Length: 239
Image 1 (cartoon, rainbow, N blue to C red):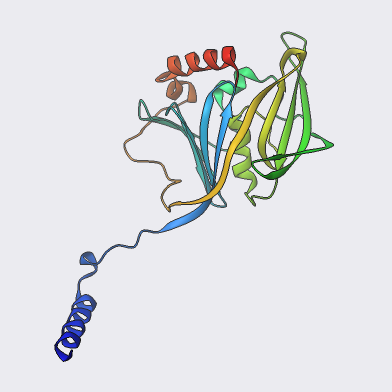
Image 2 (image 1 turned 90 degrees about the vertical axis):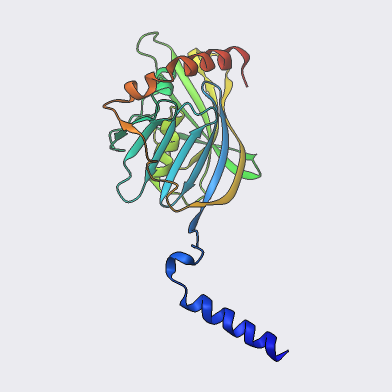
């Protein structure tokens, strides 16, 4: 027994004098919200969001959006071509592809209704928003269900809203019902998973090995054909 105590004491002494590089490095992590959403026009993607950053990853790696505090500059990446560009979030107008689909202006006003719906077990308030298409002269309208319980900063909400072609919203969009061209309407966006998770502290940083380009069009071009094909397929089959 005495011999065992001597061995334990010797082991503790050895650990205490080990150089820092020889000790196991503690991996730092932060808590964040994790969402899975399905967009009728661009397919499924995942969202990681917290008070200090947001990252949106297309399921088939077509593009990635990243923004983090304190600067909140938006990085738009194409992981296939390893290219990216950056935007000042104040001047960013949203996802390029969804901007083509939606004709609702970015400054359109939301109107809250008295209706609500539970989505992923969370109570969501229904809002409506509409805009006139300047080319067709027709009215496009969206019904949007929002949830404000995630305590996310407005910069995160702005990125998430822009990614799905919506104006800046006051809370997190959980579902969108789109009445394009005054049609009966279809589900354009739905949230299927909401949970809390942890990610490394550098998760919201720009990954190494990416080349900076001047515009989002240049970045998108590397994977444009595949994305365009997915939009056509999703439009034809619906959700």
